[in-house]
Each structure stands twice: as C-alpha cells, then as structure tokens.
Length: 197
Image 1 (spheres, rainbow, N blue to C red):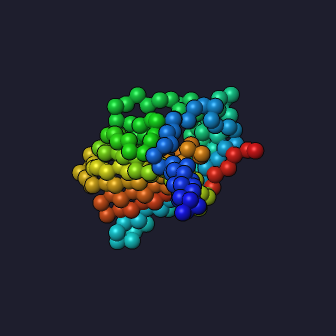
Image 2: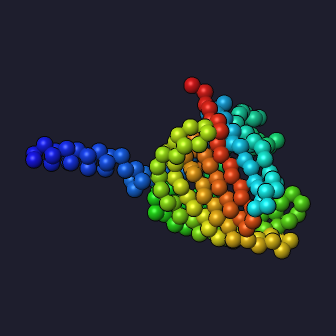
Image 3: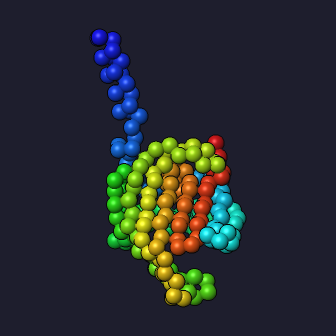
C-alpha cells in the first residue's frame, strides 16, 4: 500500500512538473535575443472552398546587418529589429505581452493594400494553451492563440474570420497560422529555422 501511494505521489508530482500549460509566461523578445544569420522559412498556401489556389509559395526572413544596424529581411525590405521589438502602443495589439494561457484581449487592425484598398479587422483574442507543437521545421513549445471576429474592406468585402496562431518563444515567431475567412482557407507553416552556433 505504501509503495502504491509513493508511486501515485511521484506520478502526480511528475505530471505537475510537466504541466506548462498554466505556468509559462513569455515576455516580448528584445533586441539582444536576435543574432546575425538567424533565419526563418515558411511555406504558405491559400485556397478557396472551390479549390482555387490564390497564393502558394515561401516566405524567408533573415537577420542581417544593414547600414550598421541589426535588421530583418522581409521580402525586398530590411526592417530594423529595434522597430520589430518596439512595444506596440495600442489598446488593441496583435500580441498582448506578456503571453500566458487564459489571457484575453481585443485586436483591431486597419490597413491599406498596395492597390489602395483599405480594410479592417476586429477580433477577440485568447491564449488557449502552451504545449509542444510539431511543424515541418520541428517540435517547439508554443502558445495557441485564437482570434475570432470580422474582416472587411472598402470594396464591399466582409467575412467572419477565425485565425489560430502558434507562437513559439524559442524561435521568437509564429510556427503556424491557420486562417478561415469566409470561403478562403490560408495556412502558413514554418519549414526551416536556423541560427549560427
């Protein structure tokens, strides 16, 4: 009987140590968390319910030195990392730092596309879990953040929207995004992450 109680106690303690879903709190990355040569590669695909592929490709970002400043390449642009890690001064941010399971907030975003179309997103966000998640690039501890709401634009488009972002602190970025928007499904997944040793 005593051995059974000890084994049960050991299992309970081990489970408690492994349960990071409730205890992890993650702050926003800072400038010193990034290093030259760090690289992320995502694959993405967007398909309508009728099977029309609207986007299909890869997105690569890398940390470089540009004009003596630490920067991240995004497409043909290089954005200073100091801008990326600058705290977002918004009552409705994309990420409400620090991240922790159970946290809820409102996210609002107004934008203008290259063709001049304006639009907005209004979503409720919630951190659902913090656990191991596997993507093509590997297995990472990640927060599951769900955003639900509406998106609309100046061309009369309006749709209910649900996004699920998997954010992995170890890579300082999202490792997977699944977006359902009306009749459109978009998935982006990290397929490679590397940094200098």
